[in-house]
Image (tube, rainbow, N blue to C red; front, side):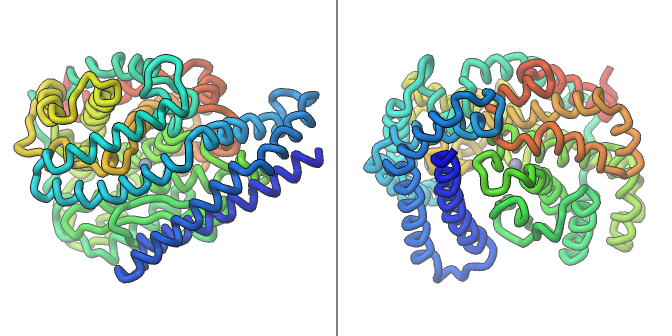
Length: 500
Ligand code: ZN
């Protein structure tokens, strides 16, 4: 196993280099003064170049081929075989794309970002359209290099959700959409819920203390992580023993930091929960972005927006903000934190309408990629889908097709992972309760260990041993499906809005 262990040593070095870059990225978002931006981007470029060169070098290829020959007699389920399967996948993809295309994409993305910011400010799609054309063209070239069997979009989706095809995702979404649209319409016809109590004055220091108390109770290990303030909430990891999250505070909107912190904690629990024996190995990684998002959504929504959760935490919340919530009952608070309202901006959407925002983007992206939708026609197509799914039409493109950063960064194929994760969160939770019915009572008592332990065993510790579809099949005994999620939504929001 000489080649195998040499290969792992080499990959460990590449991982360490990547993590050094991640520390710089975390610093950039949390503490770097604006003056550091220019040099920091050069530092990123150097690290990116060296990690790519080390990984695609002939030395890596030689070690990989040698290692593959060494493990042929081992079981396909052995860690060695599973590791090499993932390394081979990554290697074959990395060498397919010419480095000239990689750097052209990076350069165009850098330029597109500024143009998108300005176009969004002016709410003017025409400013952004030519750049988007360019990025679509380069992404099509990239997809052709990567290869696909059915649709060109599959090659791009595969980068974030390895092994899944857009046809599979489409089936899951098609099964979900009619039920979602109906639920949105039924809720719109029901008496509205007010969330005014969440818009009172919430002191920032008290918000910070409360969210740290809550996520500590959920199992976030502060000896192996920390929470800082940043413009955009995110989770980043420099190894299983240093997994950091960020949050942002809004004085007059409590959910921004609180629910955001719980969401990022879901991501962090996954990363902190990789198997200790896998440290430094390619297996010490997430299975996909969709699986990652299933963890954040599960903790944020299924746990963090449940009645049993607020039974436990609401008295504490009232105490920590003296006078602010005195006249608000637990029931009113629970209803406020779960208010459903069709809105224009995806990142502010509630649990029910959120997935319709994603489906819209998934459909438009595919149509742009295969050429059936012209870039110039995107605003009209966007607005038409908003009308049909959510019953509202944006007044301008800033509220519509210019709102998200993803397209300016050529992240085509990324959006569907948000919805896949949301759908999987309910499917996994249902299986957890079936395997261990005590989890429900534990959650009612404010004990989160049994749920976390189930997730550790079935989702976290396996790390990147399996492709996401294989992992779900192994855990649930069935492929990804949307009925668990729809049942969850119908039962929760049916009760909240008094639907029959
Ligand atoms: Zn997330």
